[in-house]
Image: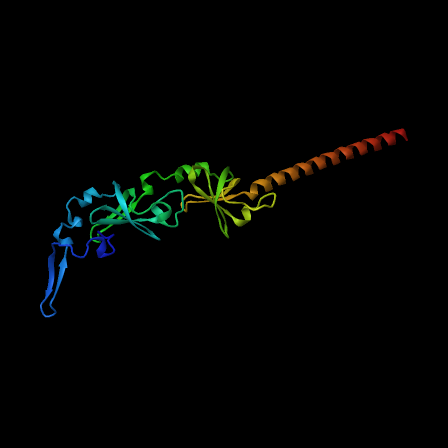
Amino acid sequence: SQHLRNPSDFLQIGDEIDAVILTMDKEERKMSLGIKQLAEDPWTKKDLLSKYAVGTTHKGTVRNLTNFGLFLELEEGIDSLVHVSDLSWSKKIKHPAEYTKKGEELEIVVLEIDRDNRRLSLGHKQIDENPWDTFASVFTLGSEHEGVVSEINDRGIILTLPYGVEGFAPKKHVKKEDGTELKMDETIAVRVIEFNKDAKRILVSHTDIWKEAERAQNSEQQADTRRKSANTNKYVEKMNKGAEKST
């Protein structure tokens, strides 16, 4: 197993074990011994390619977490990597610890098998269909939704939108009408200003919504002013004509 990091994970001082002699140096009075050689190498099994064929699903145990992914043990001697980008379709996970922990069981799909290099590429999100095909018809440009603020940073805010997908609002698009600052877990209305299925990115704006309402109100007021002005002009013109007749 590749997840063993220290001999103490496997053996204790005083244990009696069987081993295979690998090399012997009589002059240096040294021997190299091996324990795993007593068991069959799982990578040499005839049914390995069919058992872990691309597209097959399996369950494994999380053995180690790293910044770029997690190592999953499918069986003794078969450890493989699940990249952090293959954990979720809708959430951008920075570290696997946000999603799972050591010792937990995880269902995966085999994405690629490389027997020569003793390597399997695994994915967890591929268990489900790609929801971005559906998102494309839901988060259309200009559509409005409610989102909950889940993260605030120097660039803007990240919101949790319907279906659990994340949307990002740049800093200039998070300004509120009353001038107050957005807070964590606050629910706000947003409008989709960009949807990129390939990059799995949704950009939204809160500011656009109230600014458009403000512009519409101003436009209505201007139209009302023009109507009143036109009516006044017509009245003045009518009065002038009446005065001419009287004269």
